[in-house]
Amino acid sequence: MTRPHPKTNAALTGTEGNTVDGGEASVRQCAMTRERLGKNALVRFVLSPDGVVTPDVAEKLPGRGVWVTADRTVLEDALKKKAFARAFKQPVTVPDDLSETVERLLVQRFTGLLGMAKKAGDIVLGFDQVRDAMQKRAPGLLLEAADGAEDGRTKVYFLAKALYSDVTVAGALTSAELGMAFGRDRVIHGLVRKGPFAKALGAAYERLAGFRDRPELDWFKDQDR
Image (tube, rainbow, N blue to C red; front, top):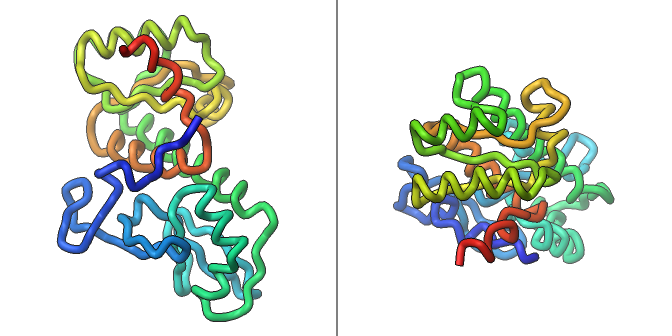
């Protein structure tokens, strides 16, 4: 399965003078492709005091940042072509598992936002609870575990499609990963209510999808025809 390039999502692509998600666009140039993209389509990297390339997913670490498109292939090309040394203008040390570290941090970012959304009352969990919630209001984001049963997720998805034309599903996380976000062993079905958290989670998921397959792109494509 081919992952969509972050540029294909208009909400994540910024240009000078445009807006992204209703705010002033904040764009950076990818150190590998030289494309100018919205920050949500990129990952920031900084150098540690001993010159190690370090991902800064939260964009809070001090120092000069170098930005790379949130896509595993682009990042690995940057490593092969020594784009970090050129961008930082000095010798650097690149960890062997940098791509895997970025993926792990992006998962943590996504699940951390899920936990915050749960505390804010914007999360619904469970098959019956999700179906009931959708009868009352359109979901901002549907959560389906990558290892969940096909029958359950299909019923949730097509109920949502029957009620609302625009349905977004995030299916790249396992039931254990979703469960960790909510203090449970496993979560199969979830829903994020419409609002700021749904928007933030949608952006975080698109970033993560550059490093992890999106099974939801295959789950429903035959039934949607």
